[in-house]
Length: 333
Image 1 (tube, helix red, strand yellow):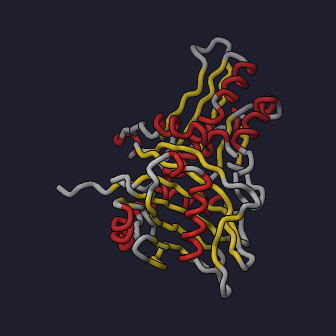
Image 2: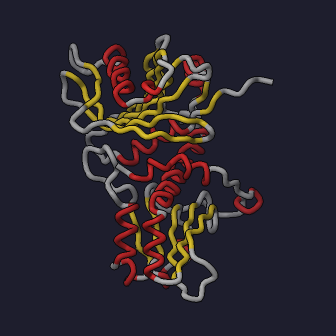
Image 3: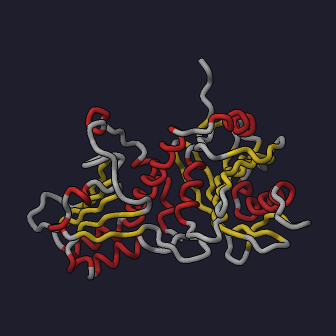
């Protein structure tokens, strides 16, 4: 499990507070590179040594709760002499600067330096030893900075190409808005449940939205209570492909929870595996659980992926980003 989830609330508060200057970014070219890639500008000696190992441990560790091993990010090592205009256009960049005569040490985070929407982190250190210490000390912040950058790009595209027909259903159930990109369709709706999905030939990306009465105490966000309600809702509403089958939570790997704060909204994030009782299907899921505006109910936004033929990291990141796009509906003036 990624350690940075524990402190994600503080991280998100720092980086989502940044505001870009429109007059500067409007003149920049669009970023290059694939989703989930990070270019690291670092000399060969340090890349093959302890500093490179630290970057790989933090940024290329296994994604949590995926059936097969997939790295959190794909890392591209670029020596300083090769860091030309092509690599400067990349979406995610880390620059290592070791200078004994430098003005200060630390990690500097910047947006849209050479392209947009770009995220850059520069590690400034007096020595290789102090650089290694900085990377290890700030590893969780570094990982979440680029994770949030990937989410933000997806959310921007979801808003730009939003499927507006889904808004009324989400607003009625939650009192808020989720930004679904085109391709998502309503599959099922009840008084307290929504099933919205993008189904293609070999992949399915789904968001389930449901609510249930709150207990009004700490038990509301215990992993036991969250999973118990999840299983009950899935059994009633998400049937499997064969008679009598239905979605449930796999306990082969115990689900985990983490308390997060994003855009002034507190929620409990749950990660785990789903499976189909009575059949052979399964995959990863992530959910956000939080109180309704009146505090009487728990609202759950859940994303899951079914893609048996493919790696799942990017599919899950895409649909998980939809959960992060949630915002309470603003009062009409």
